[in-house]
Image (cartoon, helix red, strand yellow):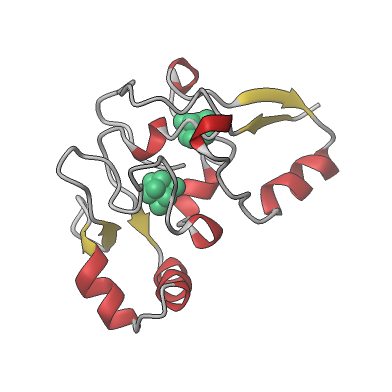
Length: 146
Ligand code: SF4
Ligand code: SF4
């Protein structure tokens, strides 16, 4: 049976070092959600990615994603980049389970498809999710996602 990793919304992946790369579709979707033109969004919220072949979201001074608010919420959760929504089910890295609190659940192949294609759920209030602490479990070289 396939394993589906259920995100616990701990936000660790929004805070570890790395980058959130953007596809053209991400730019179009997020700009529309923020009611900005694509040019305004690119200018105000993105930077050149580390590979210098595309765009990534800007970081805050502590290295966390610029769209992670002080309450631990993603400000673009309904339209977040595919890199974020695909982790850790469509991509991950060795040892990710040590810092990502997603729970492995055995599901049918049909259920896996249904879950991976479902729109991202809103983050629960911080008070309802004790996993979302301010600690910073970090792995070098990892990429943010969420
Ligand atoms: S889910 Fe992605 S876009 Fe949202 S705060 Fe986390 S890293 Fe940033
Ligand atoms: S994918 Fe993992 S690290 Fe990211 S918010 Fe969900 S549980 Fe936390």
